[in-house]
Length: 299
Image 1: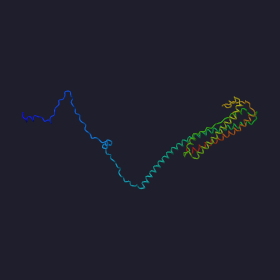
Image 2: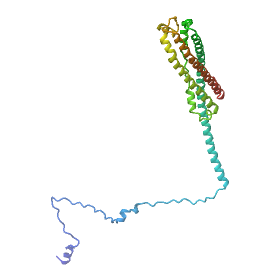
Image 3: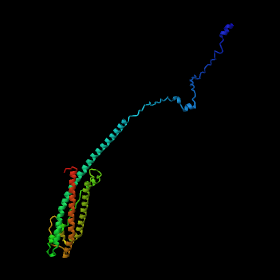
Image 4: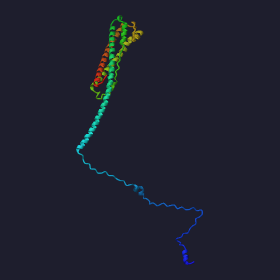
């Protein structure tokens, strides 16, 4: 073989690599892609990632020219505010007046009913107490006679008739409510206050006289009834159909004279009761008339 052929058949040691034969039990080698190297971030970039924050747009208010208003415009604005406030104040006053008027009407209507009840009751008391006064006078006249000349049956019945009283129970509900509302201009007028004051004063006086009347009955009439009436006459004297006899127990002239003296006090107190009930009745009638006329109330 020639040299030229030898050169052509020889391989370039740089171009050819020795080929290794794979082993029979070796696994094929898989080449994994290597991660791309990323440039390291500095500490300041990690703590302040300014590159990731978008740029913020700042809006500036336009510069407006504020020209001073004429003084007439300021005056007009102030006047309009004043009108609005006044209208609100007037509307509130109107609403409050309507509410107060309705409340006053309810109170005065109830007062009118109460006064009608009281006047009816006081008229009955005066009629009843007038009969008591007449019985007291008759009994006192009978007791002036000597014991032997006294009609004992009539005396017993007259004592039982004098042992009675018609108590007055006023209707004070409306008056109490009105006294709590006297700050209202519709109710706080001097005449209404004066009517209520006079009526309450005479009612209190009437109650005092009633208490004295009950006390006199317990102290003067009750002992005489218990000591000198027979049980049968005692029971019959206070029944609807009395059937008295002339029989009495342990009665002497001194007992009759003592009862006559006690009847002087009883008669005085009964007349005061009749007088004070008249005062209360007049107050109720006058107040009723005023309430109906002043507040335009119908019966």
